[in-house]
Image: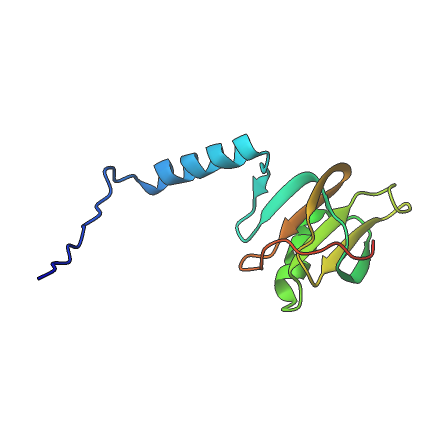
Length: 126
């Protein structure tokens, strides 16, 4: 006769949301994925995501928050890159992406990934 035992796994520590958030921020800092958190998204400062562009918008005086909002408003958008003024001409650019390209460190850009997007994909274009 064989018996199957079921192990009960209970967390040793119960943490508050603030503790969990602080832990997540520590992990992000250690891995180099720090950025600022907007109410609806995450900004990766000094980060470019090359490839996957399906729409490029010239921006007059708007900043990266407007690029983040444009991506959130477009169901096709998986990620975005805000290219700072002077990099690709006098105006800033917002590059909306249909994939989630790999990130690379660059002072040219501020990027982000739409919440709920898939893992980073292959590089194409830009």
